[in-house]
Length: 307
Ligand code: ATP
Image (cartoon, rainbow, N blue to C red; front, side, top):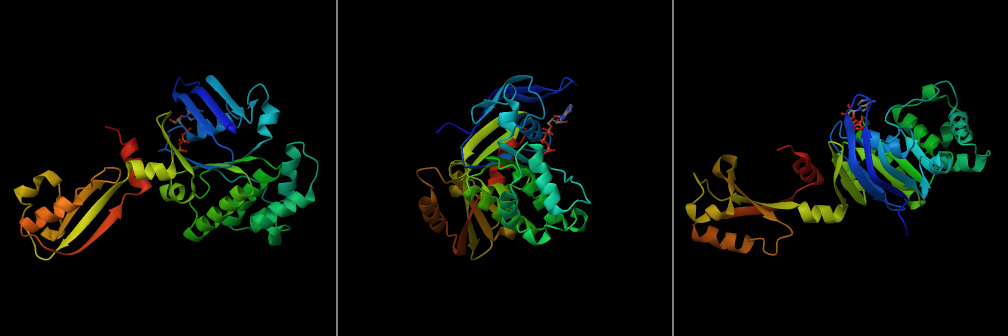
C-alpha cells in the first residue's frame, strides 16, 4: 500500500536566510505510530508545519494520501488532525461546543455521534458541559486532541504531547494514542522524551540540524545500534586491570569492585565466553553479574552528538 504521507526533497529556508530543513525525504506508512526525535531547534516543528500546510516549503513536495499539500490543500488538510505544542482554546466555551466548532471549521456537517465517540474515547464525556477554564491541564490536553479528531482525520500529529505532564498523565496519554492507532489513525508524534518513543513508536526518525539522519523500525534500531553491558561484581577489590585482559577494554569502577564489559548485540561473537575464561586465568573471581541493555536514549545521544 502506498505511504499515507510522502515528503520528497523538502527544504526550508526562513526569511532570515536560515536553512531549517535540508533535503528531507520521508514516507509515513498507513496506520503506524511514527516518532520524530531531535534536539531543540532540529526542525521538527518546521517539518510538521509544512506537512500540515501551515508553512510553505522553499523546495520539494509533500503529498498526503496522494494529495499535494500546496495544489490540493483542502483535500490534504482535511485528512490531518494537528495537536500543537501550545494549548490554546477558548477558555469559556464548553468542551462540547469547542470540539463541535472545530469540526465546523473543516466544513464538515454536524455529527453529534462522532463528537460523542471522540469525547468518550478520551474520557471527556463527563466533562462535555464543563467550561474549558475549569479543567485540569491533562484534560485540556485531551480537549486539544478531541478538537484535532473532530473532523475524522486519518492522520494525527502530536507535537510534544506530554511535555510537562506528570507520569500518570503521560501513561494515560500513551493509552489514548494506542487506542487511536487501533481505530486506524496514523500517528506522528514529536517528543523529547525518548522513553516515550521507545514505549510507543513502530518506527523512529531522528532529525538533527534540519536533516533526517535515520529512519528505522524501532526494534531493528535498538538491535542494530544497541550495545549491551556486562557488569561483573568482583569477590575482592583489584587495583588495576591485568594486561592480559587489555583487549577487552574493560572499565573498573566501584572502587575496584566492579568490571564492565561493553559488547555489541549484533556481533556474531560477544566475546563473553573468552572473557570469563581469561578472568579465571587471571585469578579474578566474581560474586554476581548482570547485563544492561542500552536504551533508545543512549542510541539517540550517540547519533546526534556533535563531534
Ligand atoms: P524544539 O524541539 O525546540 O521545538 P524544533 O525541532 O521543533 O525545536 P523548529 O521549531 O522547527 O525546531 O526550528 C528549527 C530551526 O529554525 C531553529 O533553529 C529555529 O530557530 C529556526 N526557526 C524556526 N522558525 C523560524 C522563523 N520563523 N524564522 C527564522 N528561523 C526560524
